[in-house]
Image (cartoon, rainbow, N blue to C red; front, side):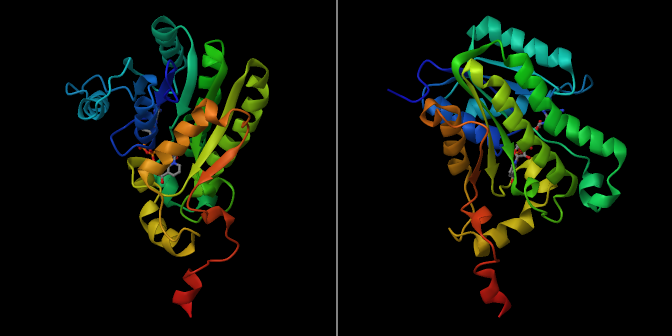
Length: 272
Ligand SMILES: NC(=O)c1ccc[n+]([C@@H]2O[C@H](COP(=O)([O-])OP(=O)(O)OC[C@H]3O[C@@H](n4cnc5c(N)ncnc54)[C@H](O)[C@@H]3O)[C@@H](O)[C@H]2O)c1
């Protein structure tokens, strides 16, 4: 029997076929899971509906079908509520929910953390952190008695990673939110975890400067290489499946072991 046979859930955060959310969704669907997707709403003047089209294209290129595809800006409570209404009508209940969403103004990412603007900070925290709490709260009554939620984080929330700046502060808050949500939802049988991925080339990743990180990870990470979309897909599916039952409030690293290092590792050979 496949891991997600008979399981139904929501995946939020597919922008294109390089998105981490897509990598995880593919693994879940390979294992028999049924998914309802959300996409960033298109601007009313965008006749081509580019955001929706990009997700549709991922599905067309794959062997899988979405149960539904609906717009959702996580800054709008009514849009979150409307997604849950659709999920209730289509699925009745949810077995898994993936939040793979983050945003900060490029200008705020480029300037030193100390110069982060108040408005930029509020927006980054709203979209990248509060939204997980809002979505979890809106979904809680739909979650089945043996279900899981997960969000995506990065090591820059644990330690200072220059260049990650305001997003590092967001990830620290997101990881703390994971622990508190795990406590709140635990009695309902809902697990809540964060998946901390090493750098991957995606839209958000490029904005956060992963280009330079990729080379460094090759030299520092114990595995001496970067992780792949396939790997993050498998680990994400694991965290959302019953295979990880008993795991909650956790930050699981899928980073080739980079976070375990206390020195620059093999990078020191290059410095010698
Ligand atoms: N790429 C990496 O190296 C990396 C590493 C660790 C963690 N992450 C995290 O993974 C998650 C997914 O990012 P990704 O790298 O797949 O990039 P991505 O650009 O493919 O995904 C980011 C998603 O956030 C969505 N989004 C932004 N603002 C939104 C809003 N207001 N409402 C709804 N959706 C909104 C975008 O539409 C997009 O689908 C993010 O939380 C990111 O911080 C990425």
